Image 1 (tube, helix red, strand yellow):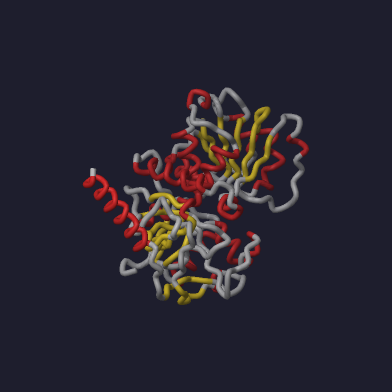
Image 2: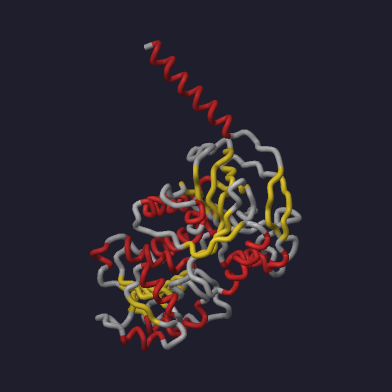
Length: 373
């Protein structure tokens, strides 16, 4: 009995000591590629900042790779105003995708410890991942897929969480493949970062018939490779193309707008079945007339991945989605959609962001810190 008590005491002491070591503040400076004002990619500058200290629920991550997203363009061009964000200091560090190793944890962190390999998208109200180190709430962090490289992992958190929230929460689609076998999802902009993982989720986990839009042979081939059943061109009449497909129904149950919905909005009621749903990951560029949605009882829903972290709405659900996705990557159900890898310096960052701004690529652009980092 005494030995058992001693054994348990030693385990508890070791666990406490390990946590205390993990919670040690890391002093020193880090490299970040930050902004001092709104503007173009020429506004990025290399600066030296203090390594941030994690709060109670935070982990401090040393980033090994980061990725770009459309939100970076909005944040850069408005110095945070596009998302209603006030920079925390003189500099604004953006970037909302990364994979790295936990260096230190806050006093109340329970899911991670020093040395854990993680991937995450972060929070627009805090400094981002275009830096050597980032502090992030543990509840929106996932365990890095073991089978993926740093670059492959860093490409996926934001787009995966976005696609999963849109499909599972906004559109309320279940993983009942029998129920879904006669249902169809139309993805506008299938070759983009979000569209390319949404195709995989919708086809491989949900069992839906997937129609993706693409306007070039390259992007059409890419979407087919990821699992899309049919491809239509978003630069041509969507309704005519949909009706020409060899499908029993000439309408779809779901539309995933991974693009500004404004251009296609008036067509959506003609594409949707009664009680159909549209989810958009972008705000419309001008006011839209929703009245035509009423006769079929259609729904238009927004998806914004940053809502949970920014407003504190069950942020742990985001971490759970990333952990679920991590298993899917390791089981080869999903593939990473990294397309371009750059060295993380000013030249590499500006090149990656120029391609991001052009909206002409496929998949994701990743920035890799030097191996000596």
